[in-house]
Image (cartoon, rainbow over all chains, first blue to last red; front, side, top):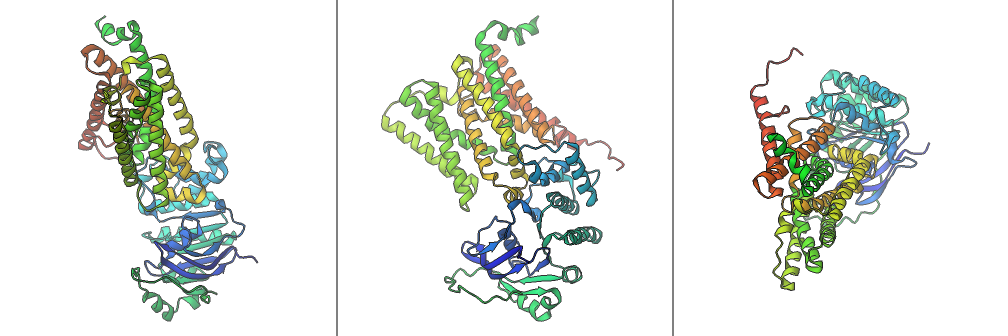
Length: 253
Length: 290
């Protein structure tokens, strides 16, 4: 089966410093892949590269036949201006962009029904007219999941979707992730809870500013690999010379 | 009868007052919604900076063609568009933030304008450019203002959705569409168009007032963007009307009178506004059951 995503010796970073260095590998269609690693390991940077808002410093990320509209991205909440006066209904309705485009309204009965279903799926029925600024952190996270639901995408990228979330909300949102998996959608999620990853994600990529290990979760989350990831140097080296490695053998599965 | 004489008669008896009222309504319809977006995108001071960027363009138009509003408008538009687009492009392609990028370009534009004026060696009276004259509207000027307001509303309707999404969640917009950058640049262009529109009536220094003050007023009365736009337009029209009456009755300059009325409405809103107004916060009423 052709890969949904291909990383070809890709290096992503900022101001010429690599945040993810020389990543090779493939993600199969329908994969459920956890991306783990310490803070600063490059998880969010990798996601920004996948969704096309950060150009690689070198190498390439190939998304095959996926159009930009086939990718749904759940960013970290910090990227959202919650003081903006927009209602829950209007905010989640932006997930319908794919079908409504520039001018399509969200007031027709079909759109309203879709939005109502998405809000119900994350337990936010009755919140339609609330301003997003009045939501708690957990409610905001559920709202972002509802928007992803509406996007109806083939590739779903979730950046730390369960941070600061209580156990019940976490279970509810994980159920949605499993549902997407059974629907054969490809799901990538950055996570910190290793027990949760072991219980729910068959495949894992361990990052530490570069790939440490990638494969079956049980084979990746070993004490040895996790120790290696912890030794990662988080800071950029301002005195570093130009990288001359053009073809590092892949450590990916 | 006294009320009629004070509030209505100036407009029924004098054509220049009717023209001024028409102009201020057109300015309110175009400028107030732009002001709401400027405020919500935390760009309120960008409007002020743009007003400075337009000034040298208008001055150059004045130098070349004398007191010709079209030349001054064209000069202002060229200067404003150039600064807005260059600042927008630099902010989007480099790490420099938009405010810093705009500050550098508008200062360069201002310096260039002053240099050109000094080389020309003419001591020009630009007071009317600085403070405008809404009571001297001729037909062509009025038509230009109405045309610009119409274009503003049409373009705003086209870019409304990406503009809202880019304001609240720019990363999301970048992942689903490439409309963010064009919508932002179109928005900056609308800011310029409305500033140029405003300086014919209110002058370059106060043109931004009829955009930002009504937006500030609206913030205290609505939590919804549609409601904010309606309140901003209404308060801009009320400020314009009351300012014209005040100017007519007391002989104070019309532009400052309009902005001062808006400022009074703003202070009233700060105190009594239903959304986070000072009085409302001091006396919020009993809390609800659920």
